[in-house]
Length: 236
Ligand code: ADP
Ligand code: MG
Image (tube, rainbow, N blue to C red; front, side, top):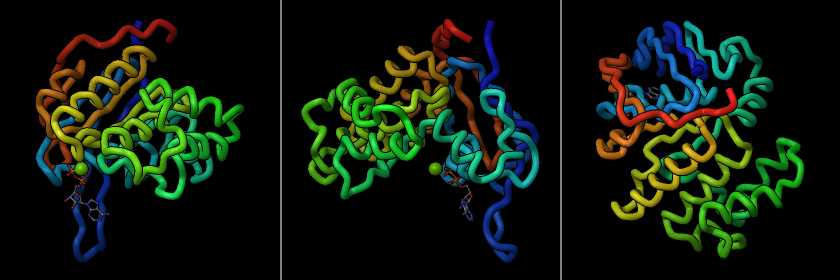
């Protein structure tokens, strides 16, 4: 039995000012099953990042519906949306988005602490160790390589055990070998946790590792096809 974890219905969004507006998402429909790894590809400016922001609850639709893990996001207040996001969705960006004046440990623990998680520093230590940074807990982002910084960002995203991991060009700022290691880490975490992953990438070989590949152009899904087998989700 598979369970639908993400539903978009006629998702529509225009950004910018009235004088210079862009119709970024055009009545988009999408269903994602729990445990799928969805690779999204498409030209620059086609709306990939905006779609991820909508799925992450960081950008609201003008019209249409979005339901994640049974929760309709379009109806939620800002506070409820932030709370939902913190518990259900992990996000990894191309440029890491770490806080420069916090150590690796603090970057992972502080968001947990703000969300009133139990033992935030213990969880952070465990997550960082699990991404290979057990020896880098007290380093600041500026003292870490790009690959290490992305590992911290991944540990931070995974720490609340989100149902959905969203990654926007997670290897885009890394050299080929480091990018491959980060991709390996993401796919192994996804399989280990039976997580749903939505991954935007320019790297066709990376998209090909996903269980499903979606091609976006000008705010529309123009192709949606199966790839590698989805991971098995035992408990839904
Ligand atoms: P992609 O990630 O596929 O490169 P984006 O989702 O970043 O595409 O952007 C899609 C389109 O929306 C682009 O034309 C971009 O310029 C436009 N856009 C994105 N964000 C904004 C914004 N805040 N205001 C105006 N236009 C925007
Ligand atoms: Mg983008």
